[in-house]
Length: 110
Image 1 (tube, helix red, strand yellow):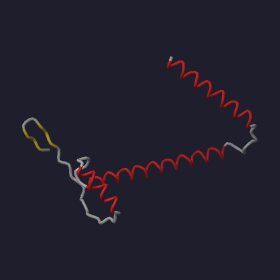
Image 2 (tube, one colour; image 1 turned 90 degrees about the horizontal axis):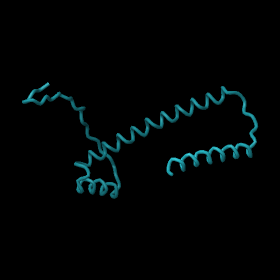
Image 3 (cartoon, helix red, strand yellow; image 1 turned 180 degrees about the vertical axis):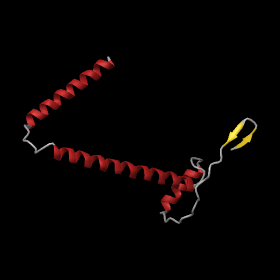
Image 4 (cartoon, helix red, strand yellow; image 1 turned 90 degrees about the vertical axis):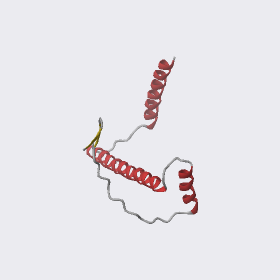
């Protein structure tokens, strides 16, 4: 740690930065330049790094979704064979739940 007056700075090692070449359309390049020129971002690299972080998070969430679907599929299979359903009764119950929910929401508003 470095000490300066009453402020304490902790040394943080930055990851090694590597340059890559990416092919973009003219429209994409203009979008990047416009964002930098407007002051929204400091550099085009900053935009690309943010987009990459967003993409990584999206992939992570997708993986979690797939895992959850597999779990639900397994639970469904373990619950036994499917039984015939009376669609009229299913719709009727769904409408009743919907009306009950709507009534509660109106009660909170009023």
